[in-house]
Amino acid sequence: MPPDLWSLYALMLKSRLLEEAVAMFWQDGLISGEMHLGTGEEAVIAGVVAHLREGDAMALDHRGTAALVMRGVDPVLLLREMLGRPDGLCGGKGGHMHLFSKEHLSASSGIVGSAGPTAAGFALASQYLRPGTVAVAFFGEGAMNQGMLLESMNLASAWNLPVLFVCKDDGWAITTASKALTGGDLNERARGLGIPASEVDGLDVSAVWEAAGSAVERARSGQGPAFLRARCVHFEGHFLGFQLIRLVRNPFKEMPKISIPLIRSLLRRGGAGLRERLSGMKTVLGAVQSTRRDPRRDRDNDPVRRARMALPSDAARLQELESQVEKEIHDALASALEEVPS
Image (cartoon, rainbow, N blue to C red; front, top):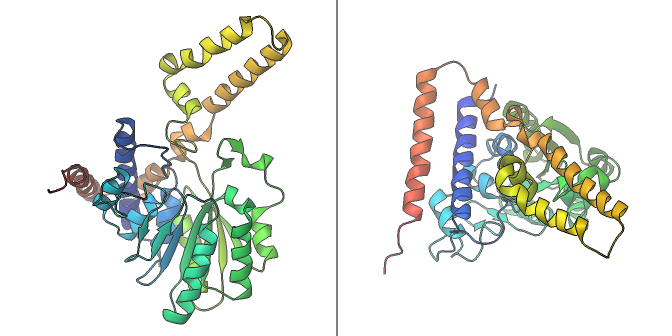
């Protein structure tokens, strides 16, 4: 049976619009601290979450908003939580990285790699309490260098736990290219632990849906864990407000903040020699040029746009769907900003 592209697109669009609203709140100063958005991951999340049923569990990383809203968590509760309000999902104490919903058997954490042991725990409980259910762990490729994640994969393999490990690989470990930090092949790491591994285009929701369906069914039927590596992008970099991306998007506003200190350091007496200073400036300018060519700036790498273009031609249905999702998010924003009753 082929995937329901309309339902998948609706999930992705809802997530995108919600996170764009979160970005707006953050930029207006209503949300404090760092903000890690999942814009660019929507196809990965939707393609997996679409296979989950009641009783299935999710262990999430610090970009858990998309998975939670797609799983059915009230967006108003999510927004109020990020605003630090006592009527938020976790009483305003979790922010955007530490979100929990007992009703949905979902938990997120800002600790890199922690989705592994959390999912293994969920899966162990599934074996005893909810046979036929599964757990999913979402994490970035940088987490594959964390011991607790690999230990959890080993345990899941040894105990035949019903877990799907989903690696969202954007090629970056914060601001360092992952290939400079990671040895070997991630799929082979999983296979070395006895876990079947597959790789998919994480920008193609249909491809993710197909791959995830096979892996989830394997876990449900008692055949043990699986590993799915999905290559994707993060449009905002590691966190919202990433300076190089801001610079490329708005050079006239941002460039003086970098160029003026660089020129001053170049002309300053004492310190490093001129050659070293010029080398440092070259490194900075090289990073800017690299960002200009970054895949995150290519509209063709937008999974939501790609999902929309793949829909069957039906303008009236598309308009109705998008209007409905936009209204839902608009109403959630208005409700989230309402004052707490005294």
